[in-house]
Image (tube, rainbow, N blue to C red; front, side):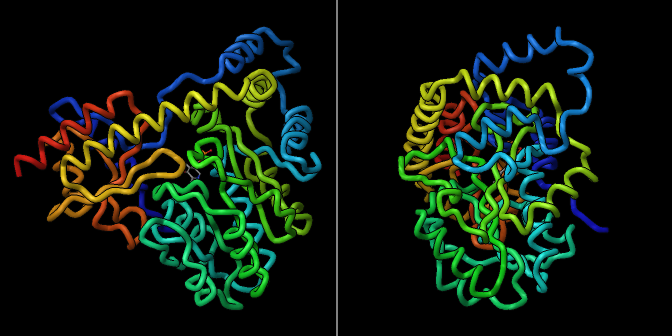
Length: 368
Ligand SMILES: Cc1ncc(COP(=O)(O)O)c(C=O)c1O
């Protein structure tokens, strides 16, 4: 199987080897504190009995699944705890591809690059469907693209990299498109706590037998290294996903699940609100500077990325390396995210040095 190493790694490696100080805005690793209860849960776990260090149930700790089910208003049997949203997306796409005749996977353009990678890994054929200039969905484009060949449609809201937040009606309309060709819709909600509009609603509320919802605590609890996420699947896809999860992983990390459970129970809404506010301030500071630099940019409604375009300086890998060497700012080339934004760069606002980065970009483009 041929698979190209994700470009994230290449850019991070290049930035690490740079001969100067570089502000890292490449990956989506939150730089803020996890919930205090998560740290306490981990400390507590270190002193647990040896039996607590053994396999948890394959689908996840019962208490965690019940806690998730109660919060999401679903049956705990429908929940599979996964190794992050990454595995949840894999399970949803795999189950969808096995359940339907076709092999096409419809994705949005711009796209989170692991989706086409996963689709190909699973023997599917990714097709990119263009979105509107502001990142919102072009329903007519989905209707045109869908056919009996379509097995899976994947949406991500709030969206990486565009920052778009889709309305529930829009997600419902895409689910209708999926139904019209007997396909599965996977909705990745890993940025659900980073909605600046206050209008985000989970696709779970649609209660549809077409929709797989995937998410994780990676971003919301600032723990991308823990690998705890989950998926809620419609009944006909559940066995496939459970079996695949068990045969590939056996299960997911028990201490991590335990600590997440404790954090879920003991963390109040303020924790999430504070991090959202922090990001809102960063978005404002960064986009003000992009204005000063004369750049075109996206103002995200959610997630924590800004797309920016500079005149005569397209978002290629070569220009990404120039920004690292000459401006001291590392972003991602837009060409990584499909075709629609190949002129753009994506900057992740998960660094306290957003203002420094913004000043550096302003100075770099003023000198050109
Ligand atoms: C849209 C999207 N889905 C999934 C993931 C992976 O999430 P996890 O770390 O929980 O596997 C990311 C990480 O950046 C992401 O941006």
